[in-house]
Image (cartoon, rainbow, N blue to C red; front, side):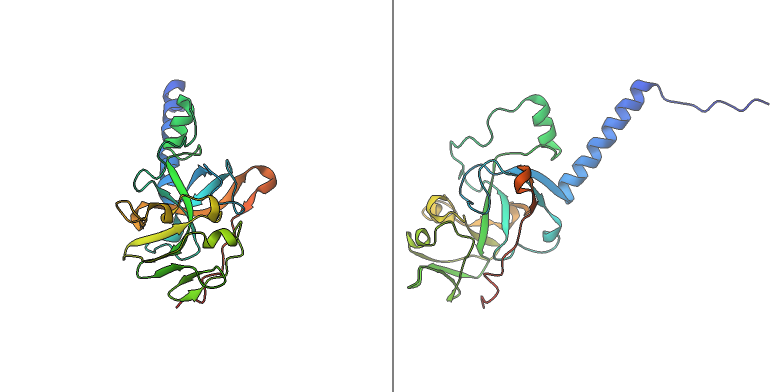
Length: 219
């Protein structure tokens, strides 16, 4: 008896199934693992420069919160971007890839976490350094240490919120620039998308994004 021929889907159905499976897997990766973003400004120089492309990982915050010193990508908490062009025009394919996390998306900001809930952050001590809970912070990653002390402030971070600042303190519209607005310049931990992990472009800057021990002595 001849062996029965196995049932096989038409090519067009197999193609649709393959694309649908790939999209589902991409959405799972975007939701739980990592997502592509790009740097929209020079606010994080020299750590990152405008138009750097990076992957943000999400597993560090599974059941945990951002820590001081983390570089985080977060959703715009209150029109911080304003009229800034956050990526220019994108075509339909690029927009579709953005949805599944395969194309660097805009509409987000990236800053360094300086204070977490309960912290008192102040600027500055006699040496121009930030203090967190009265502990002075040496920040070797800053573009200009002197620019750090240009704006004096002292704030207490509410629980569940973060105080964030750019590494390019003289050119960063970060939490300091929004102190007088609703929200007081704080960002909700719920708005954090993930932690900067890997720079993928340009190739001469490819590599993991280093952490910092600058905040290790904060009480």
